[in-house]
Image (cartoon, rainbow, N blue to C red):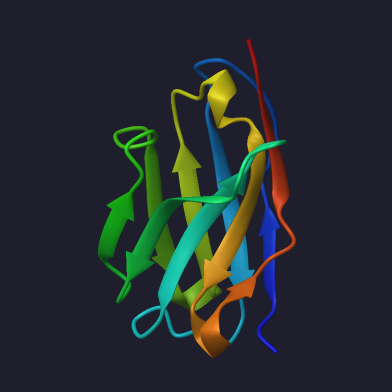
Length: 114
């Protein structure tokens, strides 16, 4: 099994920032695809950002220019820096890797007040 543990969620006002962390022991960020997903109540889970080979990134249009995905190999950690947060960013955010055909963290709640 691959263990993914998210943290850093919380309550923030519109326009604020949060940094999410995903500790992913044993994952080689240079070889595997990593991503952040989110799921709001009543909606399907959606990918918001991904990173492949430790450097190639991709972002959903809804977060482009506001969110930044990165990895720190020494700390076995993936990050999602979220700036200029909006109420529509409110969701549970999940860490993902493609190891073993897909592994997920348990999620961390992000709530952005109006």
